[in-house]
Image (cartoon, rainbow, N blue to C red):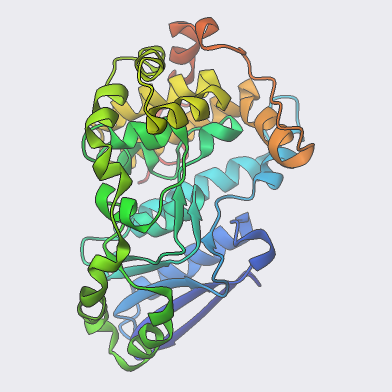
Length: 360
């Protein structure tokens, strides 16, 4: 088990507490394994009726995968084929699948930063589960900013967001708060941060079998306090711009809109990896007609292609390692991205019978 993952069972609720505050609970392979081992054990445990995942820090539930590890392991061999890197993504995506189809209510307290891999362990719960946000929630799938794509099931939950909202979130990588998370369907209830001590008391005093229903009732009076959703107000232009047929068409559409919202989205996209925006767009189109397992298998292949190409290694170098904020994207401009480059990412890496996630 990991020193950064605390687990206990109280009153029929299995409580997982992430405790790696200096890294905003970024997931290591050790943490992924601890989460998986715990959830597999509790799945068969009659003394556990529900699961709650939370954090020791009000700053974050989980900021994503450990991208410093990605960079280090990715440079371990010429093509980034580190065995630990392979293990990380295979096991992380298998964990996302486990959570998505968990047979017991899975409740995530998304207080603070919830991004990337953090979304993977917060979003996938069953229909009987619950996703809680506060005014401190900072949610995003920002992978295109580091030369990756919205993974951990993002090809499923973003492609199933209303209208073009998922495409907007995936291509811009911009951060949203509680009201927008609720509007997009990436959260269920709002609880003000000042009410979290009372929520913890409720959790402690409520049997696990009744916990999700009790939290819904507790949160109901605070629903209006989440505020107004900007994405709701901007829904028409989002659907118009991000419903365009290609990334190039999206950006061209945004260029013709002087509104601050459109210009902010355009400015963000101009900083992202041109190639990975195009891969993301294609991935979300494909993901819309695939089941969860199919989406995760697609993403697993895309990860291998990405590290072979090196885009994420350059993105992490520029933003996290050297911090020069000047990634040398390959290719450097959207005009230089060809359909063949994008198609290459979707070519099978393994035969179906050898895929590392074939058992999902």
